[in-house]
Every structure is written in structure tokens, then in C-alpha cells.
Length: 289
Image 1 (cartoon, one colour):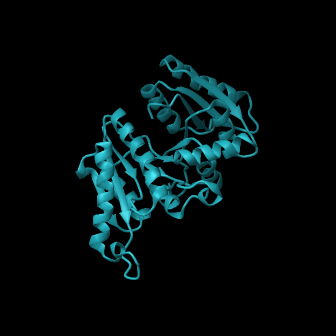
Image 2: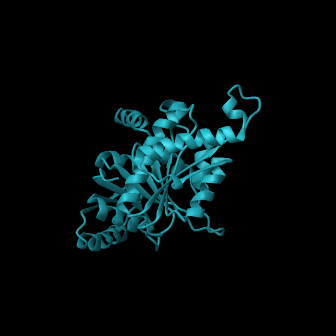
Image 3: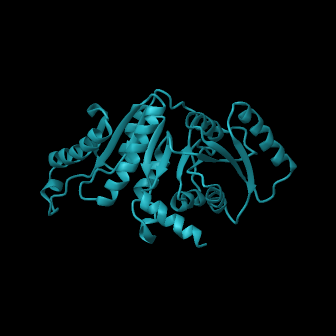
């Protein structure tokens, strides 16, 4: 997070609330990043330009560097990625709150395509709860036999720890483990206690590596799609850091059902990350378009 030089925040000038923009300004203050404000509008009018200009003035008055953009390239996610690439922004910030009769966040197909295809980290802002002095939760898959997720876990935990440090908060680490399977050829996966112990060992290794207190480790049986939102709510975490894609290539470009369900269910802000080799693969693919 400290290495971020440019932030791209996606706004909608028609909406009365600007939670993502407020969060972007707070992050820019802490990191010293340049702020790029993007309005994805295929038919902008004078009012659109005027509203963005009005938003930029008080931000500049706070001492922040801000640039406004109004663009449209075929679709929302393509527009965001195009501007992110052109400006070389390391973080994309988007308001995930959509007002509906159920007061539930609704993710559109374009949102999922953005999470899948954008090389940058993406922060989905779901609320205006301050991160300061809060519990920042790193949600990992501590399966000891999954090398791809172990690489992704390092990315997730290092970011969560850095953010907790910047926010004067506490970094917590959570992983769900599967139910025991008597038919498994690996004895570890046959017994509940053995599974719990193995996942705890993996998480303890990460805790030692990143200087996370042992009582900040949370490992329980159950689907991650249920457990991660549960522990995030229990900790009153304002931010959950999660990985969306662990592998490169076509197969890896599909966000897993578990990640989708976790993202849908969380009430906290969500920072979504990919491992470096996946981000580099996406960068290379986009450069040839």
C-alpha cells in the first residue's frame, strides 16, 4: 500500500453519496498518492464536467494532486481498465454500494469482469466506516498442499499487515478448512483435529513471518464463503483483504465461486488482490490489444 503512487477512483456524478471518493482521498493523504477521478459516461454533458470540477477543487485545497477523466470504451470494465493502464494506477477504487429494495450490494457482470481482468489491485468500498484503529482481516486459503494459494497468501497478508500499520490497527488472519473426508488418501484430511492442527500450523507460520500475534489467528471448519464473513463481522473489521485469482491462464482467470460468495456476503470494504505473476500475465495480454 505504501508503494502506491497513483489511485484511480471510479465515480458516478448522478449519485448523492461518494463513499469511494472519500475513501480514495483518505488513502491518498496517507500514501501521498496522486488521485485520478474517473467518470465512465458515454454521453457526458456540461453538468458532468462541472460536477467533477467542483469535486476536484476541495480535494486540491487539501494539498492532494488530482486529475479528472471522463471516458467511455464499450463497457464499464473496459473503460476502467483502459484508464488504469494509461495512467499506470496501482489501485482502483470503486463504490460497491448499490441501493435496492433489499439494501443489498448488487454486483453486475461488469464488476466481475473488472475483478477478473484488471491487473491492478481493486478496492470495493461498501461502507464509510473508518479504518483507523480497526481490525484489518487477511482472508487466506491455508491448504498446505496448494502452492498457488501459498503465493497468493503472502500477497494478501503483506498488504493487510501494511494497511493495519498505516491505520494504527490490528492485522488478523483467517482461514476456513474443509470438513474431514474419510475417503481421502491423505490421513490429515480424514480427521477434524488433524485438519485443524495442520491449517493452524500453516497460519502460525505466516503469523511468525509477518509478526502477527498468535491470538489474531482464526481457523475454523466450514465453507470459507460462510466463515470469512462471519469472522469479519465478529471482529467488526472495516476492511477484508482477499485474493480473487490464484493462477494465470484462462482457467485461472475465472474467479472461484468461493471468492464470489465471500465478496457478495461481506459488509466490510474489500481489497482484492492477485499474485504478481498473474498481474504480469494480464499486463502482457492488455499490451497486445
